[in-house]
Length: 425
Image (tube, rainbow, N blue to C red; front, side):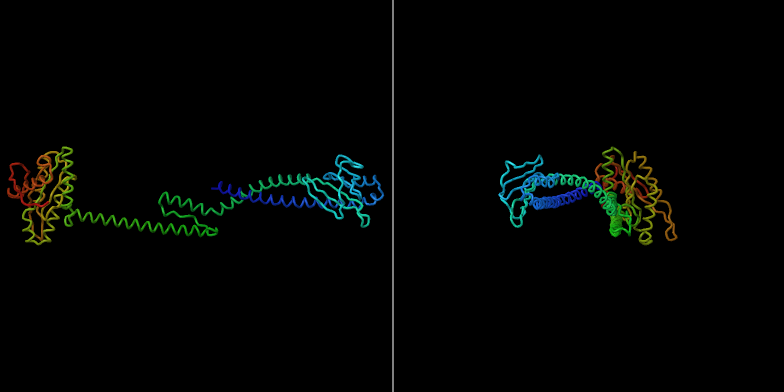
């Protein structure tokens, strides 16, 4: 940025100085031309008044002497004396003098001095008076080459001075501009960091004494508001996620036991069956139904029934493996999904331990109760590969456990009765 500002300043200052130099040269040319014209005319008038007597006396030597004295300047090119008839009687050039010049045209006499400008020189004509009578005239030819040399020198000096002045001025002006723009440059750096990092806690340094100090203050105020807005948005998003999470928990978990509910059970069972079939691994499903739970609830009250369900859920969870999932699928019925059980011995051992855990005595309102449960088991892909049939076979095994006198477990087999109670899962 500094280089670009310096370049722009240099171009602007250089153009301004060049324009000023051209105007100065034009004015100088005009003034020098007018000065040279006036000087030439003055010499012509002076010479005309000096040679009047010599012309009347026809004193050629005196005329020549006066002409030489009047033309001793380097810019004088020629001088000619005319008589009353307009004939050139004496001429001087830079190369020598001519007495009775030849090849010089006659000139009409004038009664007033006058000047003319031709290419490269001035012509001044002054009449020679004898009283009021015109007895001749003087014509001086002055070169303007000296003027052009002075103009050229002035131009060269002006260009050199302008170049030096333009560079120094552009450098000084650039430094002043950069110093004045320091707050803005600092803001651009902070803005770039904010845009890159997304960190609205960044702040620009403040300088109350600087002319643009208020800009930093308002920029920081804007960042503070954006930071507050971002915090509000993050807080709102976090609350929304928490609400969605709570809603997901409510939709997928039982409010009493905190176990996954029937909807979650079906999705998890479907995934478990697909994995078991795809990987050729054994998975198991256990239906666990508390025996005579309805009679217990009616005897001790529904609050006591909720306490029994929560207690039994905790006991079952302590027996199951960390990879197993216990769900509450009905009022007093649980289901355990067991992936990768390895063998039937593992399933049978877990079923036995579950029944024993349920049989542990519990105290309810000062009374000691022993609760039992019936467990029905089906394995995939041994007993079924399709979810609906898998559920049906597990339910048949549960019915067989109840028929066998409850407080026991049964593994599905083809020998079991092919009827089951209506379990809507």
